[in-house]
Amino acid sequence: MSLTRRFFASLSVAGIFVVVALLVPGFVSGQAPTAPAKAKVPAKAWTLSHTADGQPDLQGYWTNTTYTPLQRPNNINKDFFTKEELEEVIRHAADEEGA
Image: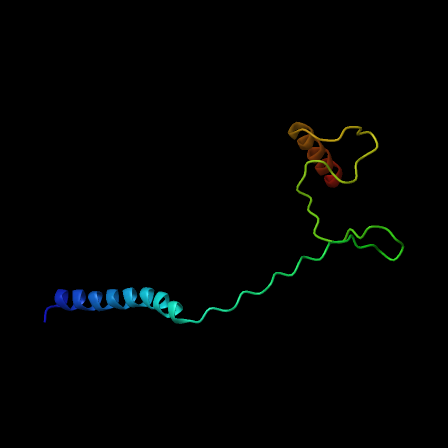
């Protein structure tokens, strides 16, 4: 038997195994008995949790993916930074850190 003939024979066998492996789960799942449908339980109403002193509990995942810092200097009186202003703040912070 030549090498190319063996290669194509083994490739054919592998292809048959792949086809069978893909088709078998569909046939097997059709044989399984269906489970009876459960009655849906209404969702419990969500309530805000509070700390021991009565304040809202703000624990969780917080990110800093914003141009505006959470703690602003006193001389800033607007809600958002433009990209140019952000670059200036970063440059100023780098200058202070390097000094």
